[in-house]
Length: 170
Image 1 (cartoon, one colour):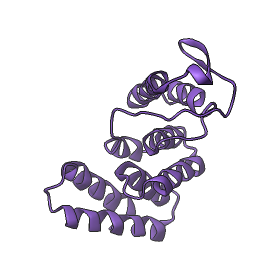
Image 2 (image 1 turned 90 degrees about the vertical axis):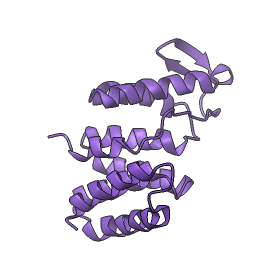
Image 3 (image 1 turned 60 degrees about the vertical axis):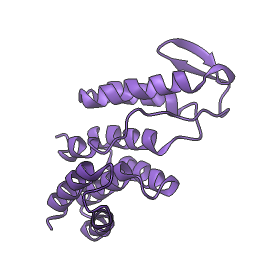
Image 4 (image 1 turned 180 degrees about the vertical axis):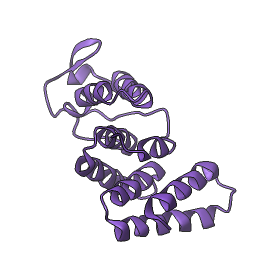
């Protein structure tokens, strides 16, 4: 059974997604061919991430994983947005341990990332770690209070709080 929170967490992804490239391996295989890392700019990496995101939205988790594996296999520095997409793919494939790790890593890079915090909270709740999920919920609620409906992501923040409250049972 697919996790119901994947759709709820997807609302917190900030498009477009751009990945950073690094020299972890000498080449990467993409849907466009084989590229040396030195020639793989943000345009190609972003294209791969967009393809993975599109497959995720279509609930083609296996296709999304293939696209994301091309990117993550060649890159050591991933943006929080890419990590959140990878976490959502993992959750869709019911690999909650990996999803939790990806969301936590994204938060370590950007502690204000709404998608990462929402994904982590929902994953923790679905893994039965209600106390840890409730801590994440408190962080989302504090952010929503500071926003007071006036920040750019106010609607998304409201949806995230509602989804996590439902998952936590608060």
